[in-house]
Length: 98
Image 1 (cartoon, one colour):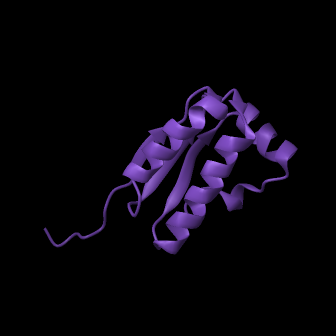
Image 2 (cartoon, helix red, strand yellow; image 1 turned 90 degrees about the vertical axis):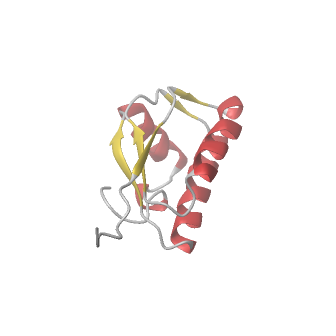
């Protein structure tokens, strides 16, 4: 019972992360604020700029809260979108797997 370490929750991202998905993504992240979090981007087929902004903001928030934010998987479309935007993966995480 002396284990104070929290296990990470996982959020699975939708296939299409566009303007209409940004509010729901933001709300889902806010619910997990301050807790270790893993994001699964394996199913993402489209990543728009608004959702990318939400993910970058989440990483900044998790860093400020000194909490871990990592990714368990990334689709090729997700990775390609990051490259197209010029956003390095380390801008989206605070620790764990890149």
